[in-house]
Length: 224
Image (tube, rainbow, N blue to C red; front, side, top):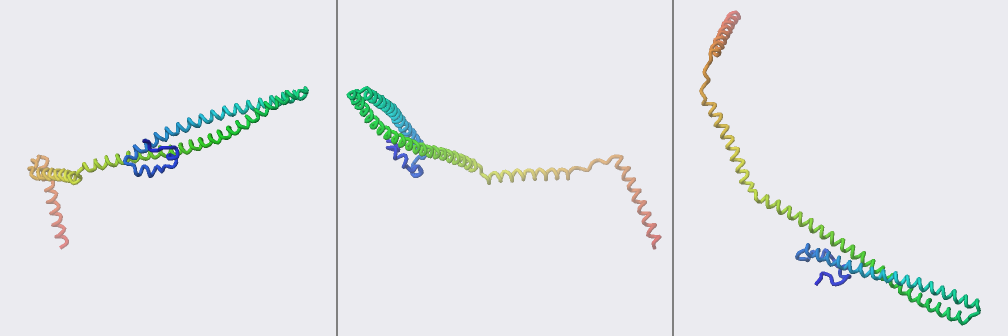
């Protein structure tokens, strides 16, 4: 059984309310769209049939008008020729076509009104169908966004932040321990063996110190 049972059900339907109460909104809107499309095809087909009938009536009406005119012209000819009997017969034919024209005009007006009704129905159906398609796009986008957020949350939950920080802290402690070991090794390293150049440098420095001391003594004596 379809969601909608007739055209007016579709036009008067509150899509938001129907989707809010649907167990599976996406499935519901797909079914809505399918039924709306099927109904729209049916309504357009019916409208096309009425339009074809309208064109047929218009052709028949034009033919009746033309024939009525022909019989009127024949009646005038018969009158000019003094043939009242023929004129009377021609006028009878003209009146018959006039009556036919009146009937066809009535049918034509009715078909035109019916076509306008169908066109209005088609417009309403297309509007409703566009609304349903927009709802479908919105639902798909919402589902995609929800799935994306869900996947992100799953990834976040997979990461144990406390464990991660513990690993970082352990890594930092290892680095500090390596640095301390390096400093300790450098501190325990024996002094480098002095070279001959180092010995001469010490001698030169010693002479400079002795010279500076003698100069200081002389200065002190002079001042005193």
